[in-house]
Image 1 (spheres, rainbow, N blue to C red):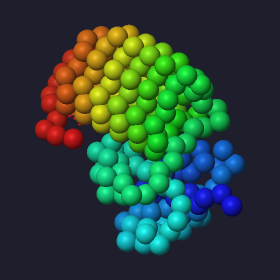
Image 2: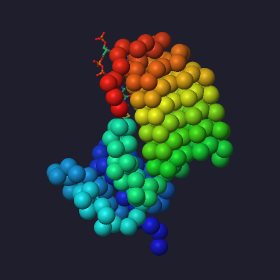
Image 3: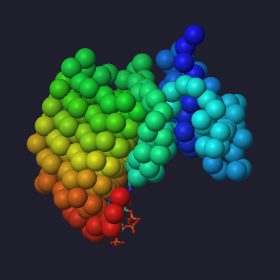
Length: 205
Ligand SMILES: CC(=O)SCCNC(=O)CCNC(=O)[C@H](O)C(C)(C)COP(=O)(O)OP(=O)(O)OC[C@H]1O[C@@H](n2cnc3c(N)ncnc32)[C@H](O)[C@@H]1OP(=O)(O)O
């Protein structure tokens, strides 16, 4: 019998992953969320994290916030996680997608790309050849990352942003929606606009 699959996070992102899992002819057996007001996600029961140890199965963290995803992955590091790739995503057989990561519909991940653990490559995002994407990164819908780009842990590439080839982006960077990144970006920077300019630094993850 197939192992049971659980989502951690009864969020909007959780709903999208729910659909993704069904697109792969699998089903979600339960959702974990500590919001006491939530009892069900798309008809599947929501459990509290205190109940999680009762369940045998594999877990996928369905929370968009990169730092929160990292915290949950650490807390539940003894659990088995799974990755999920939409059947309408294109992932090169020469790319590597880490455990706990998701690749949404119409995303493209080309050859010799390394994607870390617990990442989100969101709907229609493009990751070109030879990129290295750190753990807990989120590449938002319709963002495009050109070849040979390195992105550090926890960075969020905003919706529709573009990063030209060969750029190095630090860790826990925020790239604003629609930004065009043509220069390297240091750790914790928040960058917006075309061409991308740093408007501030985040204090931490
Ligand atoms: C499925 C999903 O939903 S995936 C989620 C996808 N979501 C995203 O991609 C969101 C990305 N986030 C953004 O673009 C945000 O605006 C951020 C993180 C860049 C900035 O947010 P905040 O820190 O709250 O900054 P704030 O809104 O105060 O804006 C600061 C300044 O930057 C400007 N600014 C903010 N975002 C952008 C942007 N994307 N492009 C250009 N300018 C921007 C603001 O106009 C403001 O300018 P001002 O000081 O001259 O008035």
